Length: 620
Image 1 (tube, one colour):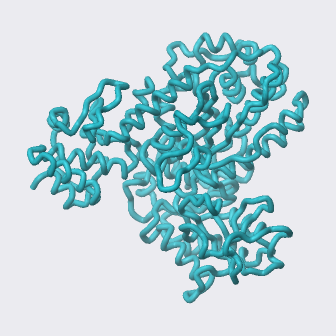
Image 2: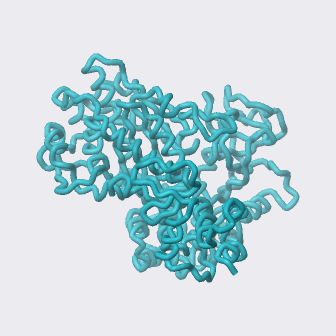
Image 3: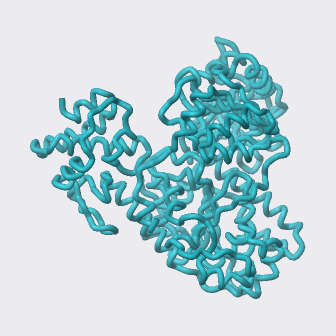
């Protein structure tokens, strides 16, 4: 049996992957089987989140017992194929070939071009240095904003770097002060414009999802409020800060029924500074289109945590850029010399910086961790994949707010039921939608899987039955909803969470308005709008499901007071240390982890690695 037929029989290919190979065979019946199989796998790789297929590691796409071709022989067959282009580094791939072979990776042509264009766009932004600021004039304000700047304060380093350069990558875990740093940097850039007698910079804040954008705006408003109390900071500078953030799709201008956006290289964004939060969630095509839409001379600031799960779609862009930048162990000598008036002489210098080494600052100090939750040691051990340390910390019971439910596979029995259900039952007693939404943010059951015994979908069904009975109405009073697709018409986005409440005028905040089609016995309320909440008729909502339980992927960009992280009974190939890290860092005050030792060890041994050539394209 041919390799292509074996892959299809074993379920390693989707119908669309197999159809691509069959189309090539119809066009040229002499196309070798190994080439057809590789073409199908290049298509399948995208579904697994990879940018390309690596013939030396085909098992990344299938656990089936397949007799794979020797890698070098397979690559030789690919090089000889008429269907596969082999352009020089940085050159545009020929349009006649649907596939591209480059440095041992086989791409669908479109995704190779996304990588090439993204790398070129980042280099363009990095090479376009802004006009040199008057550092002496800004020094008093800089010292007020960053009083520890001369003690190698990384927040101060990130802000100083962004004063002199058009590209900044600020990475760090939850609570390391990424948003605080950006708020203070933006104040500096607004002050710089005043010093120069120029108009204030046009600033855009954006994130991949609606919920992440909402959190970004909330965090920036809170940071601006704190800045007003600082001595030496003109409050009018804080008033010039942006107060709203949008999704990346809205920022770029979605075109209905089209993968294109209104803003691109020929019609760039009308902003001087573009700040993107939760950059780890941005996939390869979207990041490419964003970078190309940043105008010449504008600044691009990317914020994110490379240890979180990568994007659901293809690519692991943030990790690739971080890998290209290398370790954050200082700044290039020339840049460090220019910044001495702000940062002093204690600034470490990189002896051999990478091309992007000057543009990345990794924030390490944790600022946000609540006293009730001692998460940092567990998060660090998880990030490092140290299973022995993770298990010792969980079993030791000494971390404040961290609870380990070993070998518990049903969160709705025993202690789990006693913790989870009372909180959700309280939703039905909320006085108004604002209170109900606040209650909804207190607790979330997070799962690694969507389906199966420990999956979000069946758990939601069981929770809803426990709360409202087997014969419950579909939108019962107190039901939580999760939006699963973007709807610009409604102003609702993938990941938004709402609550269903009976349509009682007394349960509506003063002035709150119901939206399209919301005159019903039950109203689905979501955060947003000038009144803080918006109501919709449930039947008018975009695609949605239950939200008492949700996957870790869906929870990215959100935080909850308490999190119950439920791992499956059996190991699954997409379990990884990144999934564990992302799930546990959604918690603000308490964390419950339910898992067995074997599954935990398997997850911690596995990286959510993506096949990509972006790091070497950027010089890593």
